[in-house]
Length: 482
Ligand SMILES: Cc1cc2nc3c(=O)[nH]c(=O)nc-3n(C[C@H](O)[C@H](O)[C@H](O)COP(=O)(O)OP(=O)(O)OC[C@H]3O[C@@H](n4cnc5c(N)ncnc54)[C@H](O)[C@@H]3O)c2cc1C
Ligand SMILES: NC(=O)c1ccc[n+]([C@@H]2O[C@H](COP(=O)([O-])OP(=O)(O)OC[C@H]3O[C@@H](n4cnc5c(N)ncnc54)[C@H](OP(=O)(O)O)[C@@H]3O)[C@@H](O)[C@H]2O)c1
Image (cartoon, rainbow, N blue to C red):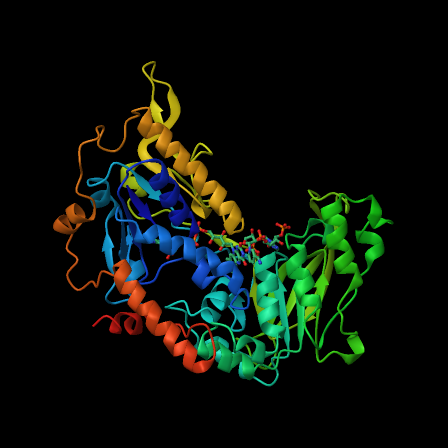
């Protein structure tokens, strides 16, 4: 079986299939290093979340598991600009050499708002900011480093009220000495130590009852030393008595309503949750034409402020928020792999998911004997994680989802459902792929290679008093192996 992607979805699918069958698994990863968003998404000050890597290490030690790192599936461009020694395998070549292919390649794009001014300097995708502070290769850091250092960059707007928005907010407000003890990239630490941001607006188009963030992440922000939370108009957005709410919502709203441990007048930095504001446009100042100076929002009205599924209604009332830094944190996005069209693998661009039956079996339209079109599982193709269900869900839910996919694979295998070959004959796996595809110039990274990179990062970190000092350029990762 080939697994495309080495994030939680890939590893948990591989783990479950290997515990239930004697499958041999090759895991392809575009980058020289594994773990996807566990390494390049999860906030550096949440090291406990990364403990799942220990399980993944265990999976990778199994004799029937092989890591094929630095090898993108489908898209050649993925591994060219920032990774000249990265290889790629066309999807069509991959499918010749396996019984099954599991797509677990996550969501490596960001969603755009589609409002005027989105390309002004100073407007960032949260994904780029998160990737940068986590050392993701290929992130262009020059603009953010310069923008944070500008003395007039004191106000940031974060658009979206999910947990990624709160991560971004915390990185902007947390004392940099706390971050120095984490695996945040050295460049980001340096830039954040020079940051002038003192005020962050976390803006949602709906209200507190509809926000996507969770209690632990809000509480963490309210407890940051020296950081104050501005209040908001409770009356119109929360029920008269929080006691009437279901327990989880009540506890979350109590934390939001209680505010920060640091009173506003003593706070060096502050933030607010600004509700019912839908982004309309970003504008430059009259003097500097290409740099953002403010965000304009339309105030929204909710169909029912106390219903978590409430929709927004237009009011035409505009609100300007001056800001020199804007982060749109409205979700990640998956895209189809090059080769899907040729193989007839259907991708829903709007939702950013591979069409599947909910159990992870990829679906496609086929003509039935009576000539009508009908949707059927595409033998041998499966999907798991964010590319299966969209870019939401924590690692635990991604694990559950991956287990569902793995169980579908195992059931299909045991019930002799057709797979890619249509038979169980032995297929070449990576050895077959390598013999067919020209990988000249590409440096394939094995699990043992990754362990060498890992060791060097950890020992570099020890010298700096942090858990690891990540390489942020693929050349530097690969130089460890030369
Ligand atoms: C900023 C952020 C912070 C988060 N923090 C937390 C947290 O604190 N706690 C928590 O529980 N959850 C957190 N999550 C959610 C968690 O990261 C996801 O649930 C999980 O990572 C999704 O797993 P995945 O395997 O589907 O995707 P990913 O983790 O994105 O893994 C996909 C992998 O596929 C690789 N890939 C992509 N394209 C190709 C290709 N063509 N060929 C080969 N490989 C490819 C990628 O490089 C990547 O390694 C966070 C998410 C984000 C965005
Ligand atoms: N500490 C953690 O556990 C942690 C940390 C980070 C991420 N994660 C997880 O990773 C997943 C992804 O997080 P996320 O924050 O990227 O996504 P998310 O939870 O889906 O939040 C997205 C936010 O963007 C808003 N939004 C979407 N489109 C918009 C638009 N056009 N205009 C204005 N606002 C818009 C949404 O508002 P609407 O609701 O109105 O659409 C929502 O507030 C989540 O499951 C999250 O819990 C977990």
